[in-house]
Image 1 (cartoon, one colour):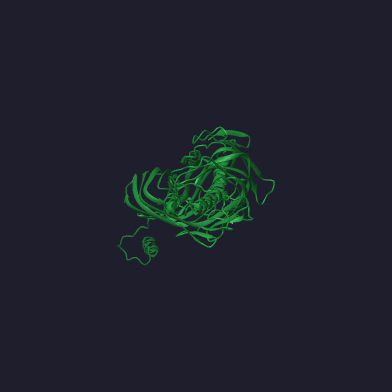
Image 2 (cartoon, chains in turn yellow, blue):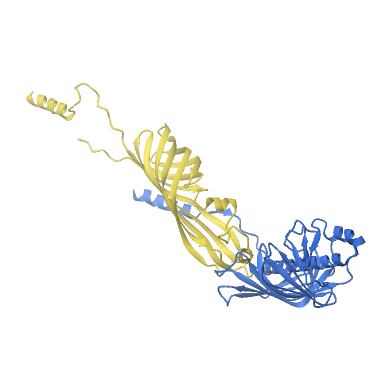
Length: 224
Length: 265
């Protein structure tokens, strides 16, 4: 009897601060998530140049004889892009809220050819790295399907061959720092532990739309 | 756990092998494009100098025309900017052309005139060296895009035109050199040296506003050699040859040779 009383008292002590008979509010089981994805048409620091006009071989705005001559000696090949290759990790702290970060790489590659013999005289390669802390808001959650929106703000760097005004393929490295911003209007993930996902209605350094896959892990809770 | 990580790594590798063409490259231009460009600039530079001489020759004709025929000549050659004289100096009204004479007819051997434009920065000296033949010289003359020097021998090709806004086609011989006014002693600035190998025929291009400094003439015969000299590296020199000797009339055949390659433009 005494043991029962003591045990019962200890039970009360364990839940100290909680009146007897009240239900215990369970804390949200946090969930870790890892993602790998590919973003298409990311907005990098050279995005306006790529979309609007390509590369000029001159750092002045006047089409001079020297500029035109240098330009006539070379021409550009196709511009290839990897898109945005993303690795992300996030923690689901609420049913509707995840916080995490994305590490991204975007590369663009172009050969520059000689007009005279069509040999490759140099390359115009650009490498962008972004680190984007992200908050994801899930507005539809089911066992297998989640829909969400997200916003990210971080920093990035682009390392490129700076095309100086040159007819000798003289390049210098150019390093630009800047922000990394990603706004995602709609995202959907399908799966439980393993899942696939897609994001659209997005704009930013991670891509206009993104597809990928991921893995969720729920830590094992110790029992008392 | 290990399988999951391995799968993720494989997925990353798979994604890294994909890429897309973000922008199509240029259509490969003709191999002598740069040579043709230098020819076009050289043609423009010679024509800019020739155009000033042509103005002076027309002013001379106007000055020697009987009074009762002056209006017709004025309307024919100077429809917009009327020539008016003050002493030995002529000006085209409402323009910045100024023609300074030595009091002699420009058809008289030994006569020396000077034509200037762009507030006196672009100057061509004209000396009559024979019948319908003049020597054109300039030193560090500058217009809106070039600065350069000329030492050219110009001959009027007869017969003279009797109607229309132009008087003569010309034969041009000699040398000149020029560079962009934006060039300087920095990397990739170039000076172009031109040498006429066979007298070039320059034909009137068409009626143009006298305020436009690009030429009123274009090359329609002859042969010219041009050397592009890099101003910061004397060893960087490109040779271009333009051979227009196969041209007939206004049908221009221009064989450009650049870095060992010859193409017809």
